[in-house]
Image: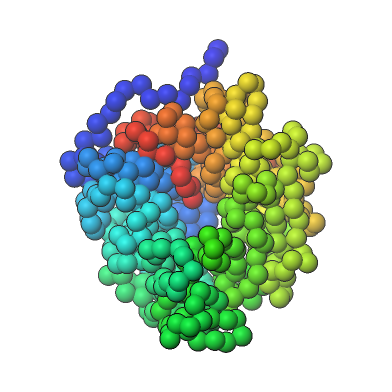
Length: 491
C-alpha cells in the first residue's frame, strides 16, 4: 500500500491563535498528574517531570493573529508511546500569559533553549525571536506542563542554558540584537544570569558576559576600546561585534559548561569560537572554522564534551573537535563526509552532509552518537529531497560502520520524498518515550510549500529505527500552517 503524503488537506483558521491565544489549542500532557517520573529522559528535556522528553519545534514563519511570520513554537509532550500531535502546547505572543503581542516578521521561535532555571525539578523553556529587540520569554515547567510567561526585555537572540560557573545551578546566557554588521564599532548587549532565576525573571546575580575578556574588534580608535592581549575589547556590558550563542558542553572537563559561539569577524565574515566557563565569567578559545550547525557531546567517551560542527556552503563536511584538559585545539579533530568507510552513499556537491548535527548517546554504550542531516541529498529522481543519518561514536571518534540513514522513501517512514523537501535540515536527539535511548527527531521546514513537518524515529541499543516512527505537520497540530517553517529549529 502506498504511504500517505504529508499534505495539508484543509485550510484551518487556527482561531485560537488569531483570536487571542494558543492556550485554547493546548492539551494537557497525559502523564502530567504522575507524582514521580516513570521514564528515563534527561531532566533538562522534561517540562512536566514525567521522565519523558518533550520536543520543541520552532515555526518562526507562522501567521499569528493575522500577523504574517509572527511565529510560534509547538511543544509535543513525550509519553511511553512517544510523540502524538494531539499531546501538545502551542506558544506564541498571542498565548494567554505570554508577554507582548504578535507582530509581523517577529519570527518568535527562531531561537530557544531549555533547562531548569528556578531549580524546582521541571525544565523551563526560553523562547527568543528573529527580531531580537522583542526580547525573550520564559515558560515555566510544572507537573501540568509549561505555564505562564515571564518577559526578558532586550535579550531576544540565541539564549543558552548551562551551568557555566559549576555551582550546580542552571545559568542563562542572553544576547541582544545588533542593527548593522559593518566594520565600524558596533555594540551588542550580552549578560550571564546566574541561577536560580525567579519566576519574576530575576537572577541570583547578573554578570557582564563580555567584560574585558572576549572579542577583538572593530575600531581601536574608539574611546571605549581597551587594548589587551586579545585586542580591542569593549565596555562592561557589550561585545564589539555580533555573536550568536550556539552550543553548550564542558569541553575541558573542569565541571563547568562552556559555550560554542558564532562570532562576526568583520568584512562580512564570521567564525566560530568557544567561551570557557569559570566562577566569574568566560574566557575565549578556539573552535573549527566551518560555519555550520554546532552541537556538543562526548563522542569518544573520555568524559569531556566534543564540539561537532556541521557543513556550510564552502565545506560540505562535518568536523569534530575533541575536548581535552586544555579545551579544544586544531590538533585533535576528525573531519568526515559520506566517503567515511561504512557510511551511506557517495559524497556529491550540494549534498549538505551536516546540514544539522545533534550529539547524544543513543545506544547506551557511554559514547555519544552523532545525528547528521544530509538535506541536499538527491535520489529517486528527486533533487534536494534530503536524508538524515546516525553515526556511532567510538573511542576514536565517529565511525560509518553501523550507521543508519533514513529518508522519506525508506520503509516505515511516513511521507514520500519530493524535490526541494530538504529533509534533515534540522535534527535533535532526545528520549521522548523514556526507555533510556535517545530518539531522533528530524525536520523538513521546506515541506509542503514551507509549512514544514517533523519526524521522530525511535532509538534502540543498536541505533535508530524507522519502525514505529511518526510524523506531524502544522495541520496535525491544529496550528497555522502557511509558510510556518515548522521544525526550524528543533530541540
